Length: 298
Image (cartoon, rainbow, N blue to C red; front, side, top):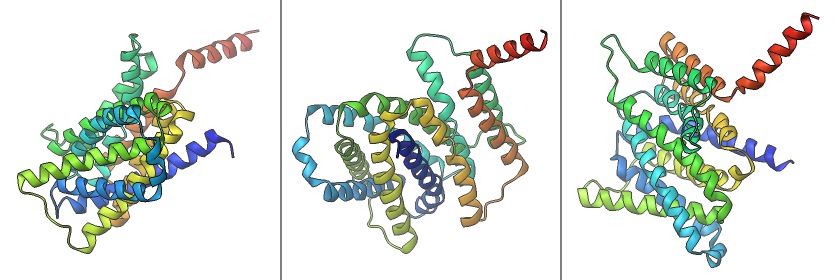
C-alpha cells in the first residue's frame, strides 16, 4: 500500500476514535475531576507504549525530550480546555466546534508565513463563525461557557497539528509520543494530588472511558499522527480531522440519545462548508472557470 494512502487511512481510523471519545469523556468528567481523568488517561497510554516499545529507549536523545516537551504544551492545554468544556456543552456540539481546528490551521500558517489569508480562507472563516453561532448562540445571544472552552481547544489543537508537522521528522515517533504522554500525565496527576482531587477510578463507566481514550484515542491515534503526518501536509491532516464532528454527533445520537436539532444541522453544514472553502485553491478554480468561458465564446 502507498505510504500516503496508508497514512490517510490510519489517521481516518484514529479520527473515528476521537469522535467517539466525546461521549465517554462527558460521562467520565461527571464522575471524576478533569485533571484526574486526563492524568489516568495519559498515564495508561504511557505505560502501554512503554511496555510495547521498551527497546526503543536506547535511542532516546535530547531532541526527543526537547520536541516532546514542546508538543506536550499545546496538547495538554487543548485537552484541558476540551474536557472542561464538555462538562457544560453537549457531546455533538463539542465535536462540531472542535472541527473548527481545520479552519485555524491554514489561518495560523498564513500568519507564520507573513502573508494575508487568501479569499477562500476568509470565506471559510466567515462561514465557520456563522456555523458556530448557530450551534452555540441561544435566543439571548450568549455563548455557553463550555462552547468557549472547546473553541479555545480547537485553536490550540490547530497549533499542535502544525507543530507535529515540523517536529515529527526530527525524532522517533514512539519516543515523541511517550514523552508527551508522560509529561501530560505527570502534570495532571500532580495538580490533582495538590488540589486534593485525586481519587482512584471506580465503576464500569469510568474505567470504560479511561481505557478507551487511553488505548484508541491516545496511544494509537497520537502515535499514528506523530509517525505518519510527515508523509502528508498539515492541510490534508486537517481535512481528515474534519470528520471528527460527524463521528461525534453520530456517536452522541446513538449512545447518549442527544437530539440532532435543525440548528445543529445548519450550524454543522456551515462549518463543514467553511472547511471545504478552506481547502479550495481559489486561484486555480477561477482559472478553470475563465478558460471554460473563453473556450465557450470561441
